[in-house]
Image: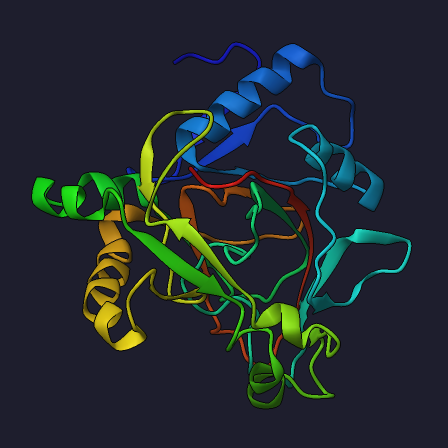
Length: 286
């Protein structure tokens, strides 16, 4: 579909497009926003280059898509802007935030719609983010497997990511990103969602399981669930479903958490990477 007010330039066959003709520091009229939203729904993740925006402008763009989430687990948020998470990795840190294929906070009752990540400082090389199309992951399954998955639900939890074991193993006092230690009970809470999710805007079906937060199939043990989940996870990560984004200072990426996975590549030890993230609240998966 043609766009009259913006440029839309796909970066891969499966997912992702760069948007041109937009200055996110300036107010956006409704007609232009409608084109941006259409590109977002079509390409699942959209990218903007050479942006210079304040935290208020970052939040204002996010609010065009919905209410903003204040993260329940991750520190630090900006004191004057609690809706913004500071995603930072310093020269000496080994761990990279988001270094596993996942969708964000699928263990919420209403997982988030998506996140806008804005680059303030990037390494001279490395630190790319990969994205994968979960529509294609579902659509390329056999008809028999689709029928088997139709009524299945999966259990999601933050255990292993945001509980005390994660704090001990992956986060320490030297880490730029910290996990709140007063949310242990919430991190261990379980939430059931359909394995196949229907997108509320496009009506398309996608796989809604991931390596980070999906623990087992509902009604089954983790051991019983593991073979099918491993198959789906491996299938989701096929290169032909993905794109890779090379960050530059002033780049902003906005991905649809309802139908796309992402992976932060951790290949830039010795350099700083500094981002601000705004997250848009979502709905209950159907």
